Image (tube, rainbow, N blue to C red):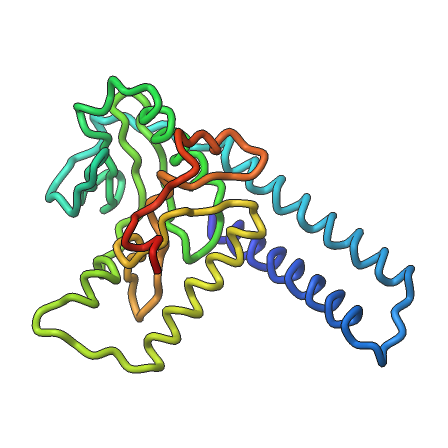
Length: 236
């Protein structure tokens, strides 16, 4: 898995650099751009993007099926309208997102929950929550556990701690890189907010909760409304 992430990052970086080179060449009137060079560059971008899509499709097809009997739920970490997240133990300490009992009769929410597991599994970026597997019977999404809580908890901790400009800019740069990768994968998260940014060790950030995410030309764009997200976050 770590090797796949490194390969994806290398591919994503190459696409980014190639596109930047092409944009710089076109915008700089002092540089003569050979049409054949531009064509070769476009072909290389297309080839790298296809390789990235192939790796994601392969990862999507290999979502591990996990039995609920192999999972031991422990403390509650958080709860939302449709699901709750528990600290748990599987083959290792993990986090388990569990669809609430009252929602399981809602076919739309069940379908969305299942698709979140497959989408997350296909996203191979160190700044995106890593999914281990999924239990289809009891609607459990098993992922890595991120020990530092959410960015929202860090911001509102008591007593308050003022973050340095360097720290804030570091968080912004990490989130920007995650969004850059999602854009490359034609995925829109649609609910970026401090509650969905989890704090890992040494100030690294992990983006979680892809329940509202949509994917261009995929089966994930099934929203009952064109409006999606958290109003407080959408207004900023």
